[in-house]
Image (cartoon, rainbow, N blue to C red; front, side, top):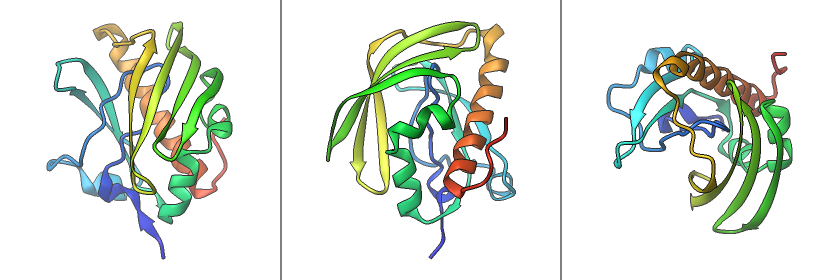
Length: 165
């Protein structure tokens, strides 16, 4: 059985950028998602902190998608801006992961707790330490481009397609 992640409007992890996770947005551009686009939206968390959300459809079984989302050893291959990373803790409830990334025009270090809300179906993450990155107006365009590129790379990895250079 093939399962499309677009219906869940996956918010993906973008190292070095603050993202907001959440349920599908009623106004999502479903035609663009199912045409293969990575739709990037500017959003704000409930506490007012701005970020970006990337949504895209994936033609892969749910098990494959989940396996890739938890394949921490492959993250530097999927996301080339990750300079270094290490998993600090990992259990059935989630993982605490430390990242060192090259993002836009700076280097950042932070720790995320990736909580497995519904194992096999849904995960969220929270920054627990390190640099807080909020793209400013001048960086917004580059952050949007990088977010779209990283969504494409993640989808390609999940679907087993060649990674763009």
